[in-house]
Length: 480
Image (tube, rainbow, N blue to C red; front, side):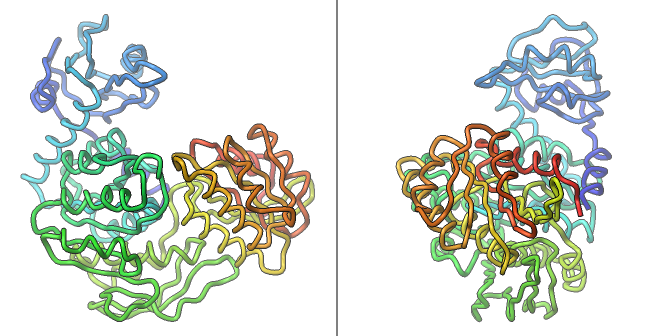
């Protein structure tokens, strides 16, 4: 399915004139009215023949410095905040602020597509599980009609517009992931594209530093419901009280799902079991039918994400048989999400649980549950990089994860990053704790401790680079 997603992205191309784009972003066209037929990009290295390159100013670099590189790779148009010395055949669209122009471009593009074809938009938010739910939705909806979804976790003011701009006249379903690191972020994303269906997964302890409290997170996540199209169906997690408290905000029908099997939920799981790789099996109950589901992604917590995706597909009118068949064949498409692989390094066989793309208290708990299930009667190890954006509660939350490591039977805990030493404080003396100073040192320290048949969990926030440790282990190892 990963290759199918890539092929779909390559096939879908932007077809807009520079003049149309300039009008959409309230900009001024300088140069010829070229036709943009390639993808819209913010990274010059991704430019192709016919591309439109958006020159953004970031904290570390200025995209205007790379416009010439984008042109050399085939870009025919650029969105800029100042006119550049480029080939006169290049269309330059001058705007006050490039990132806002990108959002305006996406909004106008989607408005035009919606006016001329049948296209529905389903958006997912939550403190954890967004990307896996997005991946599952993409696979289910693709079984019905041409569907687009974000690459990786393209869920902010840059990634979301780029996803929208990959849609074309063939697109029938659009899956969007909406993230936030502070109040108002999701509200802005819904201004770019108001969803036809809103999915609320859970409210947890992610990015506390940007919100101040869990209640602040809940209020920010609820912006998705408020910003949906009038009358839009809302899908809520019946097992999360803070999510259920959002129900009065819905202007359309409310659907609920429950991984714990609550009878009042329309979509629920019963008889949940797991195999040796912590992949869940359960009986699915919905208003449209009943069936058996065997998930292809490791981690019993993904029952929650699967039910959310199933609910979304049913709300959009996809037939139950299509949904059931698709979810049974679905896997995690995005890297570093509960990817379980058997490796061997220097003759030592072990199992790697790579869940290293992101981390918060709730997803850490799920990670250790998977480690306990897969590592039953086997030595257990963990490499944890720092959890970021936790504000004043950072030390306390890191200690709580250390407690999880101890209670989860972790033998050796390798930690990486500024606040990661608090993991060791929480784990205590019963766990061998090692503080690494770099990605390379973390991988080396772990390799020195490996035991035949052991299981290793690698997890942490993306910015603290645990995913690089996972990649190093894969590079060093031979897949079994």
